[in-house]
Image (cartoon, rainbow, N blue to C red; front, side, top):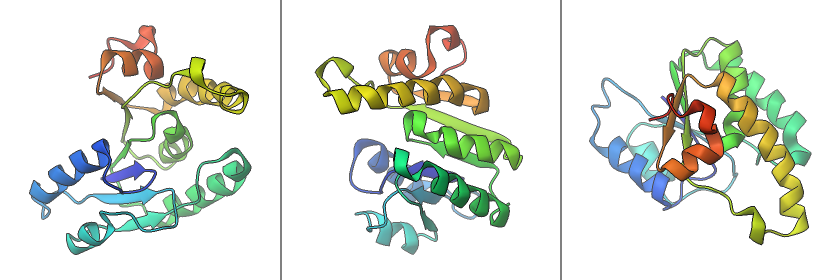
Length: 167
């Protein structure tokens, strides 16, 4: 299972996944991590001690989109072992899911953890909201499973039209 995170620090989703990782049968299931920061995270040493691999990508920023896509293509050409990709990056999983589908990864789980509050954001963040809207509308077609932590986060990321699809 390839898990997508920004960085493996002690956040809620990261801590939850680490609890699972510590307790699964790692002879049957292996978690590897694709993170989007070059600095090491709080859980990196433990992940590696448990046998997990950490793959570092550039941040998913607009100025990196072309570079990021190129890195993803290279990654999935080399790493054909993954059967499941599980993104904890909301709509930013779009890029990895699109490439994963091209490489026939059969299970692509998009996980909605929260909802942004655009009304309190500055103009730069509101402008980013346009790109976020595009990615969230398009990630659905590349996702095989939709997971959520709340109804509000599901409605924001997946839309009301997908309410029968999410768990």
